[in-house]
Image (tube, rainbow, N blue to C red):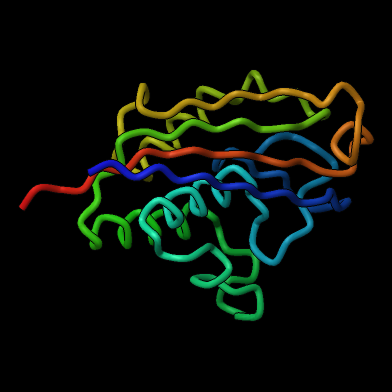
Length: 160
């Protein structure tokens, strides 16, 4: 049995915070305003995985009201979500991500993002795809107020 999951996340920029996307620290004077590290890519993937397995959403599992998640590395959250999905008898087949960012340019970091995601999910590099696009200066992303991300995943039920 196959299960498809879709995830979305967005955060606005905040001066003086580190910018972390796909587990990669990207040189920038602005990072994401968030309770955690604000990694929109990993958050969207978490929601896609949780959705595909019908296990709720990232906010249910890691509420921003809990101090232990303050400034947490989102790779830790992704690992926990992957374990939860696996414990519920699913195999992660692949992940496809689209990042919407007017700035900074993300092309130089995409391969490293793919490696990080693949490593955390125990997938191969070719099982993970990350694409980056702009919004042609439209909306909050185009005004360089923040970044958004969509993620899609395919799960397969493990055979017993």
